[in-house]
Length: 438
Image 1 (cartoon, rainbow, N blue to C red):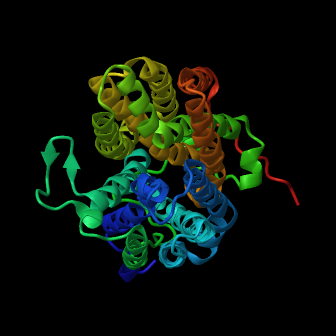
Image 2: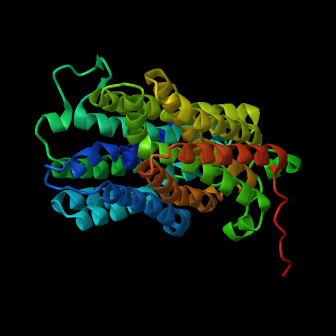
C-alpha cells in the first residue's frame, strides 16, 4: 500500500452525494406529468402512458443494477461504471428531448436509457463507501443516498420555482416553465447537467487500497464477524439464506408503499381534500406541496437519520421499527389525508420512512453478507424495489380509478406491519457459507 493512493475518505462521500443528486431525477417525474397529459398541449399523453414511462425507468434501474453494475464495478472499479452511468443517463434525457412529442421516443430515452444510467451509477457510491467507512456503515450509506432523495426536490423545483405553499424562496422567478421552456428543452438541459455532474462526482469514487482501515478502528472479532460484514457471501450463497428473502420481502413492501404514494399523492390528495370542501385548484396546490416539500425533504432526511440510528440500535431493530411505523402511517393516511395538516404530516412521515429503506438495506446487506461483497450482493436485494416500482404505482392507479383509495393504502400498511413483525422475531445473522473442500 502506497501513501499516494489514499485520498481523504470524505472526498468519496462528496462525490457520492453529487452523483446521487443527479440520479434522483427519477423521483422528479411528477414535474413533467402535468405538461405531458395537458389536453391542450403538444403531448396529450394519458395518465397510464406517463406511469408506464415511470415504471419502465424504475424497473430498468433495478435490473441493470443487479445484472450489470454490481459485477462490473467489482471488476473495473466504481469510478468507471459511475462515469458510464452518467453518460447513459444524460444521453437518455437528451434523446427524450429530441424525440419531440413521441411517447415511444420518451419511453426509450427517459424510461429505458435513463433508468439504465441510474442503475449503473447508483450502486457505485454505496460499494465504495462501505469499504471506506466500515465503522459507520449506516450513517454513511444514508448520507450518500440522501442526495438521491434531495435530488427530486431540486429538479422538481427548478421547473416551477422554489415556492412551498405560501413561502416563496425565489420571488419573481417561476422556474424554467415560467421562463417559457418546454418539456423537451428541460429534458435536454437536464441531460447535459446529469452527464457533466455525474462524471465529475464519479472521479473520486475509488476503493481504498487493499488492507486499508480507518485509523483507530478495530476490525470485528471472529465471533462477531458474521453480523458486522466480516464474512463474505457470493450472490448465489446469499440467495440460499432465509435472511436474504426476509430483507427482499421487507424492502419490497416498503418500496411498494412509498412508490405508490409518490405516484398517486397528487390524485389522492385532490380527491380527499375536495371531498372535504376544499376548492379543486387549492387542493392541487396543497397536494403538490405535500409531495414537493414534505415528502421530498423528509425522504432525504430519513436516509441520514435512519442510517445513523441503525448504527446505534442495530440493523434488525431499525428495520422493524421503520417498517412498523410505515405500516401504521399508511393505514392512517387514508383517514387523515382529507385535511391539509393530515396530508402534510402523512406525506412527511411516509417520505421519512421510505427514505430509510435506502440506508438500512444496503447496510444490512453489508452486515450479513460482507462489506467487500456489497457491490455485487445489494443489487439483488434492490431488485425488490424494481418489483415494487411496478406493483405500487399500478395498485394505486387501479384503486384510484375505482375511487377505492382505502384498498390501496390499507393493504400496503398491513403488509408493512407483517414484515416488521417477521424482522423483529426472526432476522438474525446468517451462518457463514460452507467452503467446499477441493
